[in-house]
Amino acid sequence: MTDTTTTKDVANDIAETSGTLAEKASATYASAKESVSDAAAKSRDAVSSAAKSTAETVKAHPGATAAIVAGAAAAIAGAAFGASKLIEKKREADALPKVPPSAT
Image (cartoon, rainbow, N blue to C red; front, side, top):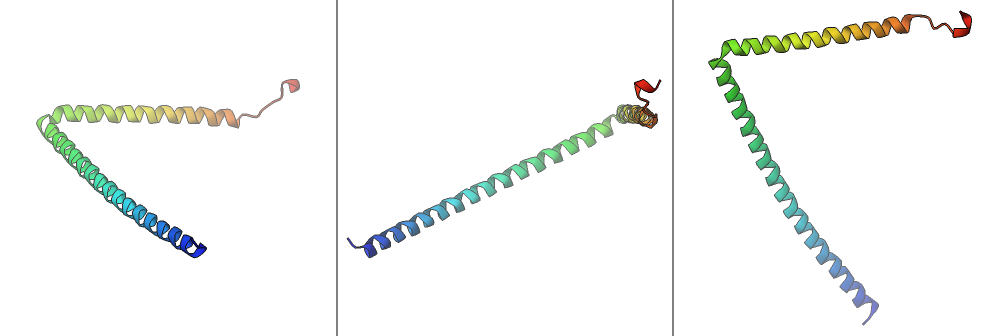
């Protein structure tokens, strides 16, 4: 066997392996694409269903919905007020001059 024959054999093996890898990669890509498309469709259907269900519930119980929205708004407002007070106290504490203990 000559070096030329061996080199050609190796080149052919590499080409064959490359082709096989390309086919496998293409099949994997197609499978992944299909899986993502299926997941997206299922997610879209689930969100659509949830939105329809929520809309129907709101229409069926407008008073309860208003009470829930008002409660959530009050909770958010309370949290924002509390956070603003904490920030205000932090700013006041940072604004006070720092006096070393030996200076008093």
